[in-house]
Image (cartoon, rainbow, N blue to C red):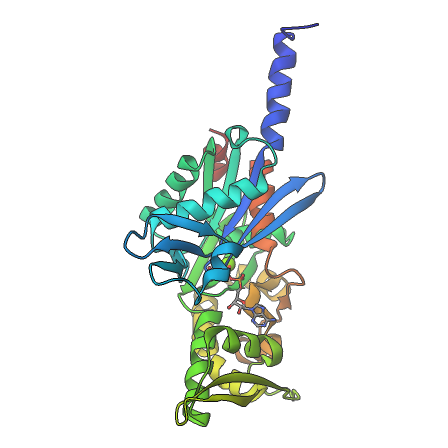
Length: 358
Ligand SMILES: Nc1ncnc2c1ncn2[C@@H]1O[C@H](COP(=O)(O)OP(=O)(O)OP(=O)(O)O)[C@@H](O)[C@H]1O
Ligand SMILES: [Mg+2]
């Protein structure tokens, strides 16, 4: 029996150990996704970004993820289910920490004490204070080293775009609470534009439109479901509208009432957000050097749950002349990119890499 290995062997084992205990986390407004590298694939865990807390003591967390989500709208009076992130920003440190600890537990088969390095994607325009807060939460949650990177950069890496090229690539991330446009060249971010609006706002607008048109109040979940069922954005390309139904409460009789929601209603509800996106894209293109424009023309990818709205690709091309590819993996690509960086910080530009290796 060997109680002590050779020192070099110990070193080697340590290094291997370190590389196996890494995680990538996309701390989203609606969904938190954890990716754990496993060979050349990833084990993925998706957790609703919801925690249940005591109403009188909002830092007292009772449940996280699916369990908390199940309590939404059905909790006893002294318990509330809330989202720790709003528009991609941390609303409550204690709640965000509970979410992150839970996410790390999901992703770590072994003890959390061995968690060597986690990389967390957050919105590109997050302030230094926000970044620091996420870093601290990660460390308090038990990771030895935490690196916070822009979701856009993580998405580009996750999608396998050649981020180290000088020619430029662009990522458009349309989430629930925020939408990011990120231009990348030589492994770093050269330009970024963030709108603190996303799919959540489309849901809100659907609720308002249904109220106005049918005098019926529908819930958040019905609105989101309708959006996913028949979601579309306006474009010059002919798209056949489809129809779905939602049950709400009649404002006249207070009875349940079924309403018909079609793609055009959803497209109307999405229009203000789409217009903001087009405006932001125009600003980014206005600032872009001619050197980068051909790279971006050839390699722009759209990720995030909201990228799945029909007609989006066509609309973006009509408005700004950039052909885009809609990711076939829109909801997990950020976590995968973060996981790649966690396992191999060389995926990043030198300064960031140095920090990641420290
Ligand atoms: N098929 C679909 N069509 C349209 N929207 C969809 C579809 N599937 C999911 N969504 C929307 O995508 C959004 C969630 O996307 P995602 O998981 O990328 O957001 P997030 O990362 O949690 O948010 P953020 O990045 O803003 O913090 C929600 O608004 C959801 O309703
Ligand atoms: Mg996101």
